[in-house]
Amino acid sequence: MPELRKDYITNGWVVISSERAARPIDFRKSVACAPSTAPADCPFCTGNETKTPPEIMAYRAAGTERNSPGWWVRVVPNKFPALKIEGEVDHQVNHLFSHMNGIGAHEVVIETPEHCDSIATLPDGQVQEIVNAYKDRYNDLTRDRRLKYILIFKNHGKEAGASLAHPHSQIIATPMIPRRIMDELEGARNYWYSTGGSCIYDDIIKRELEDKQRVVLETDGFVAICPYAARFPFETWILPKTHDPIFEDVGDDERAKLSYVLKWVLKAMHSRLGDPPYNYYIHTAPSDRNDYRFYHWHLEIMPRLSQAAGFERGTGFYINSVTPEDAARLLRMGPE
Image 1 (cartoon, rainbow, N blue to C red):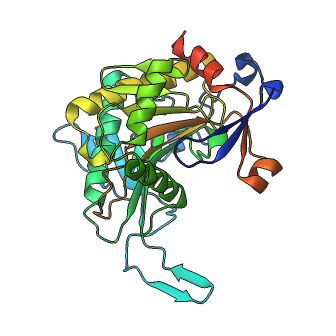
Image 2 (image 1 turned 90 degrees about the horizontal axis):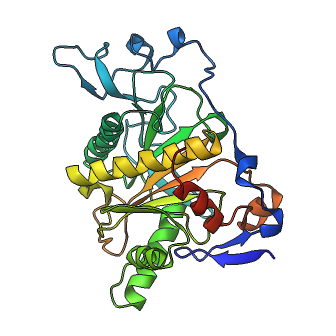
């Protein structure tokens, strides 16, 4: 029997359709490295540094020059940016029509010099360096008062929107707070004040650890769960156990723990689902210096194993053909 479940945070509804359920094996697919360009022409490969805009930041060997080989993580401006850093925000409203110029930042985090690696297969230390780069760039972008929100995200595989096979993440900073984040903030704020100061994410962690059915992995610093009202098959959230609204505050020890959990979950998906395409993104409080004590930063992973169709687009309801309980049970088995 299909079941309607309500999202903890946003109060949106999801259809968990057991009658449409597919076996986990039906989702197995591979996005093994099949580059659209030969590695010799890949702009993200070592030796091709001149094919990208000049680097913003790089972790590189001592004595090596900027925009040359010798790096292990490199950050560059997106060559085809969605938003541009130059200029001032000019917001104009004319009755029904509101617009502003496209001020923002759009950066690429090149995660490794190796063309056919992935986070699931990289050494633990390299994954931590990727997370370190996220933190360094986030901290730098928060100094720009024009920017109100900074989204760190990754597209893995063509179906997930990756235009290049070489492992990379992206950062887009916007002069306004995105709608999805506003919905989460509103839900967390309402819960905080209705409960006299309880964080809804802290309570989710507590209840899910008690229930155990949807827990994928628990460590001393983080918990990974398939959320109760998951919108997509094998949707997984990674949440810090320590309450903190902003990713900016993540210390060295926490970054190491986050890196471990992120790699473990992605390696389990790689192994159990055949390296599926996925998106992940870090949801954190806005960078506008307001009080967001009620919020709780976290990372969401969305495997791209199904597609939104007419019903989803017409209603905002999602149909998930794999129950979160079944998804967590499989992922909890870990990498094969």
